[in-house]
Image (cartoon, rainbow over the protein chains, first blue to last red):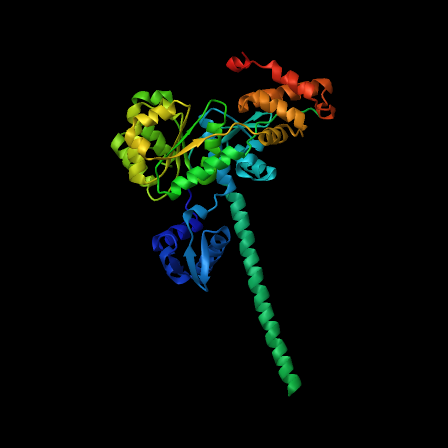
Length: 184
Length: 244
């Protein structure tokens, strides 16, 4: 399985304490082993994602609490992949509709995932909407290109937001200076 | 438009019951669950869907394992993400425990009635040491097999019985698989004919769709679905003992 940054943060959280244990971002960043400001910002972003997905909750500013493991939602792609593998054990093929039914994903998302699997040669299109898994492994194939594209997009979004903040601060400062001149 | 019947999965009452039971086993800190029922009721596919949804492990017993505990434990290792399991039983067992411990992952063992009696003790050890719940899935004879092993039976906290197909599930399945909105009279005919068996329902629906396509000359969606069509489709297949 791939070791993503989120996985590193997740394992650091579990090292810090059991369920319901509280932790602060500084300690967590040390445990993850990040030192630069940029990496610490990545920890903050990851914590924000965890909070949204219900893995952790915010107790007060900078302090978080790990919620029960059971509340961690499993990503839809993972559900589809595991179901695919399990069905293979019965020699069965799967369809888009079936994967939709199991994972509650949209048809477009299911098709996109199947396209990726076809591209990687992991799956065979049997025709009539049926797909069969060829290579069974516990590690799920991932769309690295798309992940990289989304990462770049998020970085650009963050940079744009930082630029807006800086511009706003500069405008505020200019406003104050103009006011001071007017008062004089 | 020519109608088709696609393979699909309906998250019905049985899916929810099994998911709740599996989660309850996790909350109670392990133990065994038993899911048994007649063939065609959807045990395997529901166990697979639940396992995929809760991050569980699904293991299907192969008849070839009958004499090899190593094959069995190696397969479990592979399912736990160990690509090349060791060639020795003890090492495999320890690795499986290492992978399971502290994860609360529910392990579904399908076709468990095929397992030799001794293998139940391996499951018992795995369950005790890892504190992960194990759900055994199989035909009705599974119960007597589990009851024979007193230590295992005393740790069986959940017995899950699947409900037969409901009318709503029949209607939902038809909609998802073929896009057809069946009138209530047709739903009740297919429901009665299926006797709770998904495979019979699928076959009957294929019959209905085939007849609609034939009547509509390839435009099955323009032909009204009548109770008569459903009755003919339902009477076309063999019913085995039930038909007698």
